[in-house]
Every structure is written in C-alpha cells, then in structure tokens.
Picture (cartoon, rainbow, N blue to C red):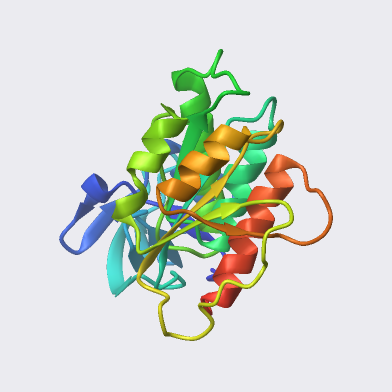
Length: 243
C-alpha cells in the first residue's frame, strides 16, 4: 500500500509488537482501500507515535497488524502553538479546527466573551471537533492530534497566558512585525488570541494587553473571525520557521 494515508490507532490498542485498528479505521483500510493480509500501512496514535505495520488479519471490524517501525513526532512543529479563538456561529469553528490542525496547532482553547454566547455547544459538538481534528491530522501526515479544551470565559484564557513563552493577540491596525524571526526570543510555545465574529470589546483588548498579550496586525484588510484565526496561525508558524 501507499504511505500517503495515515490510520488512527488508539494508544491502548498498541500492545508490544502489535496493534489493532478500531472498526471505523479497519473498515476504511480493508473495505475502501481493499488492503490484504501482508500489506503495509502507517498508523498514528495522536500522541506523537507513528507506526509502520504489516497486516496479519484483514478483518473489516478489527484489523490486526505487526509493527515493523516506530518513529516519534514526525511532521510536528518544534514550537507548541495554542489557538485561542472566540466562539463563532454555525460551521465556522469546524473550519478553524480543521485548518488549524493542518497548519500544526497543538491545542485549541475556545472562549465566550462579551459579544458571544456559548448556547447549544454540548458534547456532540466537541465530538465533531475531535473527529475533524483527527481527520485533519491524518490528512496532513501529522502524528499529534490537537487537544480541544473545554470552553471557558475570556478571563479564563487570560489566566492561561503564563503557560506559554509568547502571547499574541490579533488587532486591526497593529504592527505586523513579530520581532521573533530566527531563533532569538521565539521560545518553545505560543498562544494566539483572536476574537469572535463581532470582535473583542475595547475593555477586553485592554485586559489582554495587561495580561501580557502583544498585539499583532494581520494586514490592512478586515478579515472574518475564522479567516483571521487561520491567517494568524499561518503568519506565526512562518515567522517561527515552522512552515
């Protein structure tokens, strides 16, 4: 088989020199890709491990394989980037999760602010976001599946600032120069804060600055919240040398 597709394996289903795929992944491998016993495929556990494995039982409900090779943190950024984004309506958060994952985001922190509401966001929504993150990680050949934290209020995001070396907030009209090109002052982690569709209030922007978030401009044009989130990640990843 081609190595162009990664499959997901639950870390608990890796036992010594063998691994087992769940029914969803097994069905795709055996029924869709028509993989046979003896063929080789790649699997990731979402925690940085990647396995090259040979199928020893091509069961569409539970495919079993022998591990031939194990690598760690392949195609992962050296910098841990967290995207903190205000809740948007409809499927816009789906877009943020999918594209953020493809670009190398390590974790997502979504929040409710003065101009947003978190109504209707339950376990089903989180399950969907996690599935999207898993699919995007597989598609982009990553080995880490980003963590999606529980939704918090804006102040909760500010309280997380000290967990990261670098803290940036998207702001219209702000300087677009990060001042972190190269290795100097880049740190090992960054949190990127972008407001919701209606933006952050002036009070929230000021509180973010006081908490240590440095404003960063994303160009002269006004962007939709979901677009700004993806552009923000792209700009920072490029400046950090991760693209």
